[in-house]
View (cartoon, one colour):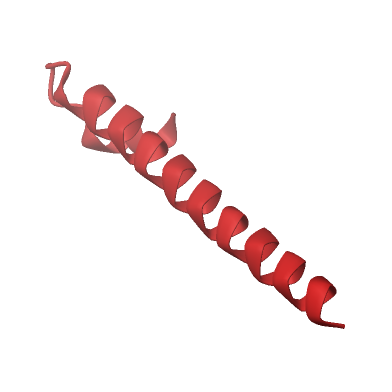
Length: 47
């Protein structure tokens, strides 16, 4: 919310940018978590 306040210029663009950034971060964290789980599963199978 504070980032939207800093970027506020009277349009909806700052809010759209923050929502998009949150979406990108969420997908990135999800992909990294999925890779870590897959790596852990492979290590567990070989041990």
